[in-house]
Length: 582
Image (cartoon, rainbow, N blue to C red; front, side, top):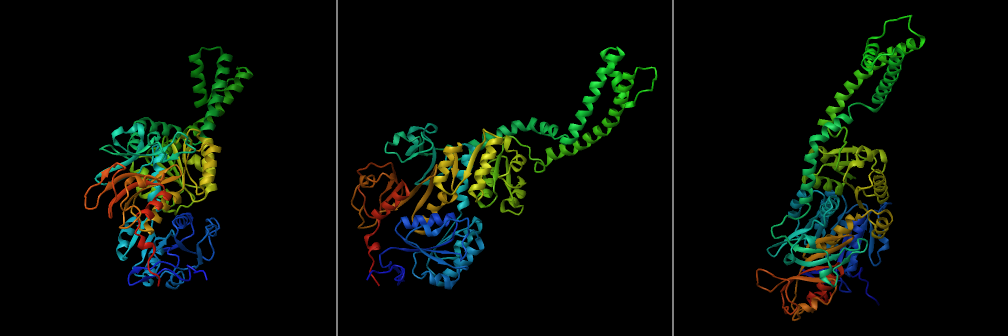
């Protein structure tokens, strides 16, 4: 009889992990959106048993969890103790709470703690300040924000710089840069060959061919700050003349302006005709026209019929012109004040960044751009969206409307913006907004959020939209690593690939115990960047392949997800995978 891994669930006995019937760890994931889908995929790829708890009525626009083979699907409308017991939480290795509800995730974590007090819990939360305090309520908890993880990649793409990833490790600050932007001695690892933007080669065999590298900062400023400062300085130089021009452009409404121009045209035409009929000079003609238009002409029956008609027309034009000029002046004063003092009323801007979709990710993107000094205009259909309230607090202009409509994009001045970041949760809406923006502004940089990687690739090739991002693709590796308690230091997005920077400890008796670093280099998906012997405070950077590994030595690597999974198995204690059966 074949053992059922779900019936003979994983459990802890005496505080020690006992494993499942087939020695695979068991994880429980709660959620049904793209992030949950990606995290489940990561866990399955790591040979874990996964139970996914989804609502009874799944979202019609969400990914189908049933397409992932080898998982157990449990439907429940509420995450209660009973639900968790039915899912086999008692004895599970970890629990991931991935709903977009901070309070609901906290409540679910408290319920789970009643079932399994020492459980590893990974929580998704937008409010990171609250999350740092919530962690203290649990014995083993990690709080992550997918919006915070993904937003820097969107910001960097909008500003036209490479991935903003930078981190501190082993006494050094490392950052991602183009090879020609750093000195050769500062390069730590070649990351990708980007000569073919549609098909980047990640961790190429020839490290010298990689034009995207991981380098030591060495006192240099990292991230999107330099690009943002250049934009801010350009905006400050333009502000001197841009506000008066904006005031003049908005001096009057279109209807009043057209009516005024029409009446003035009548005055000019009939003034010229009158001057020719009277046979006077140009100066005298101007005098007669102005006086006759503004004060009317004295009737003179001795004039010819043509001259009398011209006098009547100019008098009527004068009657229409005076109230139009008065209306234009009043309307112009009001509009000029709005344009100069309250940009939110008429956001006619130049060189700004438009963010469409002010949900969790859009709010973070808007916030970071504003902090960098970049002018931002937000767009959302809901005036009560999370980002709308934040925009009011930080004085960012917001246009309420459908971002996939041309008129809404015009209101946000997309035709004069430098970049458009479209981050709503609907791929079709995002694509439509991007295509309309390209029609209004062919030179605009479009940063597009798309869930489906294959679809994103086709869109880039078909419509020449060079930058697409998936929030779940960027954040899922970190969530999965946290759930499996892996020491992931940083994630590096490269196009639609993600590289992981991790520190791996060699366990006694593992495959790597006694081997040289050359054994690690046999996997093309792994690059060793540092090595620390047990008991030594600092690592050796770019160590030679001949270094011999011993128990509790630490290896720092840049790896693909599959490469990191392989390395963890090579460095794992063999007794952890063959624990005694119950």
